[in-house]
Length: 171
Ligand code: ADP
Image (cartoon, rainbow, N blue to C red; front, side):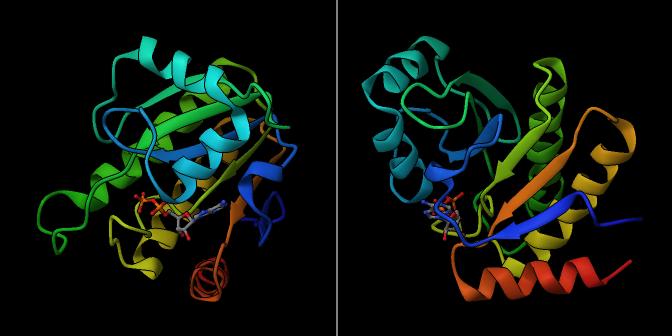
């Protein structure tokens, strides 16, 4: 499977001019730390108001809002699993996050989408295992959805970048 529509960047996700960026949110969708806090700061208070209307989101699912003051038109909020050692269905839940995001991207006609490394911050998911799932689901989405032009993985630290580089080198 080709990787040419999958790119890595170290840029802050709130500065990316993709059609959509993905937020690693929590179940309340009402903001938190990490990438979630950065996205809410960048988008402004209208994002929080829109998230209130959504009434939360179960783990593994995703919801979409506008991007408000962000350069991205849309924000897809997904809730990754907290890592409990891998025995609580974490890999399937993480895969479901990516699939839910790609499904919304398709529904809303997004051609470019940027993802943070969902669950690998405060939620503690091991970076290499998470990157492998992200890449597998991205390749699947690219094969299924021809309107998807590029998928950007934001590697906010060097360990994350290494994990993605390793994953992309695998077939
Ligand atoms: P989670 O709760 O899903 O683990 P975090 O926000 O704690 O979410 O971390 C998810 C990933 O997002 C981590 O790799 C973290 O380094 C990264 N991250 C944090 N801030 C930003 C940002 N502004 N842009 C892109 N990625 C970020």
